[in-house]
Image (cartoon, rainbow, N blue to C red):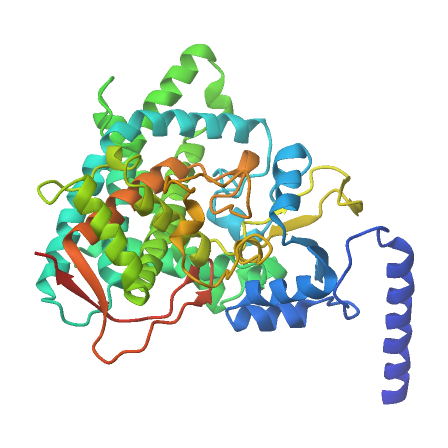
Length: 496
């Protein structure tokens, strides 16, 4: 009986291998050796569990090239490890590679992909993104005031530490979350506010659910079973939707034409203006789309910005010479009688370079949100069939020794010219912290403003130091949804 079963399994395996050989697309990028049926699932799952998938993919690129193929059940994935190839895909061939692959958890959490991040490229997505851009332009003039108010609260908390070692993660998280809450629906929270704690809780529970290898993405039917991830995703969606539905309802009831209190007001106004031009706009963009756009701002904005600031603190503690140069520039250009403002950025060249180097070295978005081929296409002479998933390895690009000499060293002068002026290199070198093309981060301008104001003011007010007797902080963190530093403690000492 056992022998017969083994023979049957062997026959099934041989049949599968023959079928795969004759039906698999030809001319694909080089592939990591796959196992029958499961492809590279075991390797990828191991790398994900080690929280360093981006490093293993970068190592694989040394053997297989700047573009190679991975196979996981139900998905062929092409990994791109070169900025030049990424630009070809995202800019030169944007019509080919602007799609989003379907993942059950993303679809479930976004009311059928009615947000901007998870939605596939289609006419509704184009209209929705334009509406969000218009809303952000309306909101932008009041962003700095809100960031400055939140920084004052952060400064008070850091001053209260009296220069003793602290873990700054909760304080930074509170600051960036309050900026997001103020931006989206005009709320400000204290750190012990139950609603704030609920927002942090459901966001932190949501991120592990979004992984490509989450069990619900591999086996969507498991949503009907009482497993942990099934319970978690229902809690996250229900909790978030109750909150955002109520905030949106309140805004509709209290909205006054011409008065923009926050991004939700701006979305309402933008939608009204669009309706005047196209009376059928509500047939395309529903309230679900608006609420999911609010959710997008939460899920992306607070995690990436907070993590970038936490990495900046690591670098300042490890590189006191860089910190001193930033402080000297701020003192000389802005002076000690006024806090740095957003409009100072064009004069603070070394400060801007330090922020850009933070974005490069930290590579918070170490791996892009996956893209999808919308049609049969090619890259670097390889065939990319319609429906193929594309993953852009930003880590490999930002650590490319051909572009960045001594890539693992924190060196802001990479972003300065011979005259010490800040230079934008996004279109020239391996530097894509916000992506590119149609899917470029929609909140890039707001994120840059928030980062500049908070970072420049931190160094204006504090010296950031390692704990007494502590070795340098680790420069490679852990990759979840974003690349985060490992927990650490540092000292904030008030400058005179």
